Length: 396
Image (tube, rainbow, N blue to C red):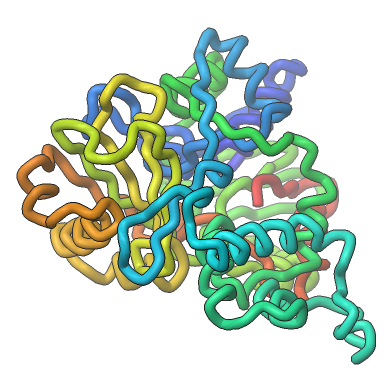
């Protein structure tokens, strides 16, 4: 199994428990992939990558229970604080009626997309295929200002631009997702769950795979100066890393086309710890259309944590990644001051620690979630198909 992220560990766990002889090869010096818990910034665990359990029915809940861990419920979108025109953020219930109606309308429009796609105008024009989420919303009558808000509230969730997301792929995801709408954090952090989940599994860390030779009889995997032989191989690495792997013979034309169809964009977190919370204790999610667009409180549900994080993706994140870490944290601090209605000097006086985490700069991630652009929605099932009865693919 190539990769010890969530998909690789799940494959390893199931096969090991079924009595198979497995070995997981991981390039990093840790397991978890794009889930990574930090214990240095604060006196509680902070997840630097994947942070939430999305849905009250998600299978993760049973794993958390079996591991003896705990969850903290978090309400985000229904507890959104929004900032307009550089003003301090206010709860969506207290926004001016026109702004509140745009946010509520965009969320309703998005939820209704599986039942209203393609929109009437597109049907009249014979546009029955696919389109971007941005184009779909434009056809539904939303203007530029609303599209900027939708980019933050909807597209950034997928680590993408609103004009880079396939409606058909989003709809398919909605139709198969039955996990529910509630959200949670793991109190002990995702790494604690993965440490328990990977118990007894054979895992080789610091073992980046370079080449996979495969025949109908099995695989020969070259990693560093070592060679591993197996009957089957499950590949769970992110798409940008998958593109770099050398397969001999090459993968099928259909598989290569599917791999190249995916887009992966930047995903960056700016994490700040203050002496105390400088925001309303009920704050869980805060946003605006600026560069440092989305903020949340990793310490929500804990006593006076004083920790807040900015999650930035796509083009916004690329700009933040191009800065030095110090400049990036300074930039985020200025935006935070505007959102909270506080002077930058007050924030700096109370600041204890700051950390930037760029997943694009991680060589074994090279970005956040992979997504499907318009008119390529049929490639996700193709990516999931095996090559012969030898190479299998999981994860994205």
